Length: 378
Image 1 (tube, rainbow, N blue to C red):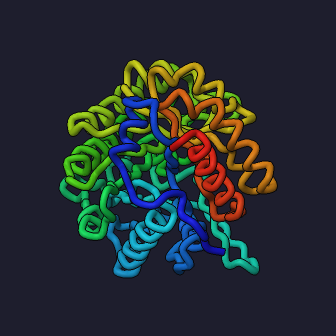
Image 2 (image 1 turned 180 degrees about the vertical axis):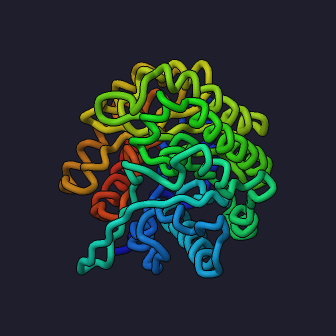
Image 3 (image 1 turned 120 degrees about the horizontal axis):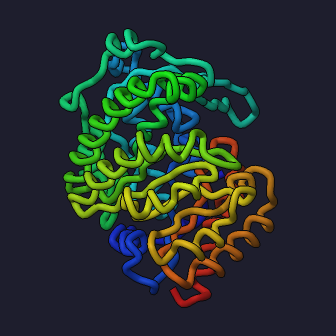
């Protein structure tokens, strides 16, 4: 089932940038996503996907930190798919990612269905490739010279007029948990905080260099930085841990984007309101993403913070999977009526468009937003 009508014709990243930076209240509400799983993009475009979920990106780096020819071809296919998807739907940007060769392990499950194989990756809760200080010392840490921006170079001559690159970056705390496993991350945050700090610093040096270099690229528009720090009822670790070990490092990453005049957008799942003032006042984020109705509906977050940062997404992922089209449309109208008129808001999923989402519900969100914009004279 491919999309019959794009959300809009043409691409205008500058208009999106003004919304992200709260420089305008006029104009249509744009669409935005942290990520769309390749299997979902394949359904929209009718193009075969090299992988099922975006988390499989981590599998492209081999255990020796190198990218095989097969993985390289998968990466190129993903870029081609991302470009075709942005054109087909009418996004103002194309997803891309820097190549930072940091080998890690994932767990995954595959399920064969009539619609194809569905695969989901997740972090090992128990342990990872790093268990001791000796493992840390022996790990094949890449240097900043190993970072590659070939993805941006590849897309540059193919970008449609008016579009830019949205740089997707897996967060340093995310990668820490992949390298250690969540249980070991929690335990070592108390027993071996120096090891945690050393790992985070290695990762931050790489992230800072990657973001700085990418945002200097002429086709770069913004950074969408994915750093899950919470779950449904609170933070994964204490606010004290995050303020000591992570918040100052996130500021360095935001500064790397801001040096080039580019927005720094933060995604974090979970109930992270305990850190929101840190995100805004210390890190200096320009926009925040990830909303789930059973944590806090996007409307109430928008009411509290929209005069300081842009609010992004908001349509609960559960609706894309379990709701009817009419239910999705009703919820989209509800969100737009609350968040659309005040500016600083872009609509999309509360998390991502997953490979298990009903694609017709994704289309319903796009269509209802286009209708809302038209109704309001945009």
